[in-house]
Length: 65
Image (cartoon, rainbow, N blue to C red):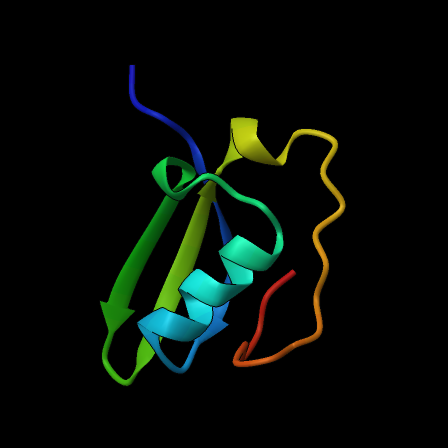
């Protein structure tokens, strides 16, 4: 059985996506960062999101929740 991931948003760079995950104390093992054209998509494993209130200052994020 594979892990289920939830899209957390699109960013302008891998660093912006990684910074967002780190600001929200998401374990790097629970994160997938994928480049799609000129954007980067951040996905977070659903089990890592359970009951979590993610902080969003929209820094570097192009869309999301």
